[in-house]
Image 1 (tube, helix red, strand yellow):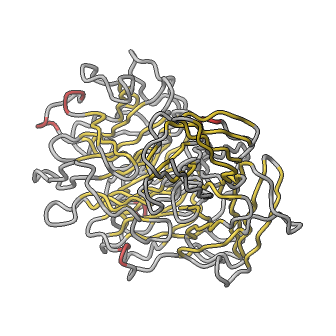
Image 2 (cartoon, rainbow, N blue to C red):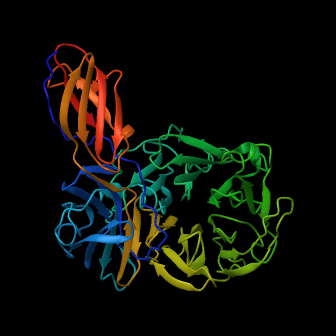
Image 3 (tube, helix red, strand yellow):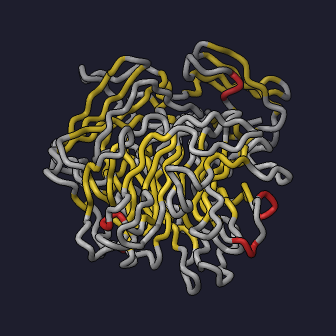
Amino acid sequence: MKILRQSFVLTFLAILAALATSAPLARANVYASNIKLNGALANANVSQGSSVNISYILNEPASSGVTIKIYSGATAVRTLNVSGGGTGALKGSNTVVWDGKNDANAIVPPGNYSITITAATAGYTVWTQTTSDTDPGSSVSWPSGIAADQNTNSPYYGRIVVCNGVGSGAGAGIVKLNADGSLADEGQSTAGYAFAPDGYLGDCCRSLKTGSDDRLYFNDWTGIGKIVACDMIMSTNQVICDGANFPFPASGGNYGEIDIANLGTTNAMAYFTDSPSYPSLGVWAFPLTNNGIADPTFPGIQVVATGGADLPLRAGFGLAVDDNFDICIGQTRGGTNQSSPRLCCISNWVGAASLPIVDDQTNWNIGAFDDSFRYVSSVAIDSRANPKFVAAGMNGATGGIRVVNFADGSVVTNVQSDGTVFFIATGWDNVGNLYGGTSVSVWRAFSPPGANQATTPSVWTVRVSVPIQITSISVSGATSTVHFTGDPAALATDFTLLSSATVAGPYTPAAGASITGSAGAYTATAPTTGPIQFYRIKH
């Protein structure tokens, strides 16, 4: 039997690994997201001495530059610096090449390497809109919900999702965007969910939130409402709560707002406030104990009732809950000279499953007798773990977004509150940018003032391997033996012997093959087949 020898260096399979980091990220307004290695949302496996393309999206220009660090364990082996204003520091998609070397210009040894990207900017003197209303991704007919993925361990970190809650017509559903406002790479989808209005209130999706489980949640206002969850690319959907859980019939009203807190724990809850109806039912919680779904036989827990100092008349539009069960509630009350507060925070309800909690502990309430604070339409907190700010979208009166301190309710700023643009929805990202859905059919992003920087760890890693080299091929009886060298850290089971009757292929796994060896030296054996055979090794 004649054997034609071929030597190939093949690194087809990426080794799955994720960068874990315990260091807190600085809060800032410019940051990197959508990090890819060699153009893919996947780990990169490269031969020693090969280069790696590191691409990322900046939500705005990094006027003070970008720093990319390559780590072996906790040690930075290479630092790549990009000056502000240059390629690699621009708003949108950027690519920087790592040549596989360390700071001493030596080729790095085999191993796993992690990556962080730090973007910095001189910032702005005041809250500044960083999106353009003319961008294709900014136009949404009825942006009734908006949120950003805050999960730094997700490949979709920084993704923006916007409800288009139109009562009829094309486009109803959720728009997926990158942090710079460009449309998501994988395109748009419905997650298999029927976004269809029923004529009551009209919004087929509203009050969009992202969870720590890297899913997005929205409120479907059709009927008496339901909470629906989708994965971040919206390939599937899951109904979390529906009409079977609710404590009133369809004729009694509609649930106005939602939030999801403490996901991944036994305290995971879905929350609803009722719509501005009479009598008001306040705020209800539904434990998510059935594989992330509320028990369909459980009617919920009333955690805040109206009739107390905080909610004398009704709950309304706007709900945000942090991981300590602090509950921020908005009231859309539009009448002038009203004594009822428009925004309140109730703290530390104990979560007892059998007891309604009425005005458990008032943290603060604001907006009474303040006609500029009418028509609160949405409420968002900047962090579930450590909230500092509450944003209230104003769908009337002065319009704009009112930002207050989470601790005491004092007003920090009013964003675009000139009475010309009303905000239906509000949200925050992980680095302190503010988002709003407007009455003029666009969504907008706003950057806080001040110089800043933020570091994003890549979810993906680079595996640098020793190139595979076939060193010899021999035949003994009915057995072919292939000796080869490869990555010393690899197991014999990490390799596959491929064979073909022609040099051009196609190559498929050799039938009956086995591979042994370790520490960089390996041997593959397989039964001989046919008069001529070509071999390759795949890692």
